[in-house]
Length: 236
Image (cartoon, rainbow, N blue to C red; front, side, top):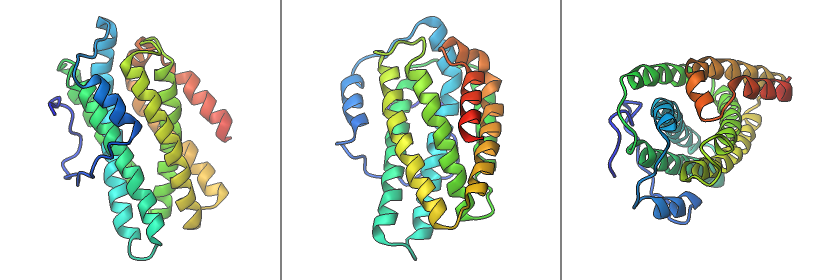
């Protein structure tokens, strides 16, 4: 598949999982891969700058879940490792579909800066003290992404647009991933207090990253301040 020059976020090689052709995003890809996905001029520019943020998140998640599955394979039941492999496979489909969209968007000089900021954020997020803390942070991040995808799905691009439909499918997967990561965090001993603290830390760090592109999010109908306040109220 053709890829955008800015489509790869990390130097680490992703071991490509076999893409499950029964996945809902497989049906989306089959429907839209053969024809151009068109946007208005303002949405084209906005998404050209936002896609590196989304893709870095998906590729970071793939790497993390691969590593966690390998770590846990030695001392966890097979069905637990399978749950992580399934999340990784979901993230692979997200990456594949977002790459399809990004490949049809133009190269802009600002994309390098956006990608570097996302790389710093996700690399820092992975520097956790323990596997338990990593799962807490991932659950928190995926909860934020679930809400963000819902806002994009319902934003100004239009609810029936192929990209909005894709965001709706990603949203459903991310909500499931929250449950999986939260389960592992609790199983490894994460307390309610620790999870509450980490949620707010992740939210603050993610919003610092996203708000660098607040104007672009506004162009696609996403109000980051409202998103932040909604999650703060939910988690406090």
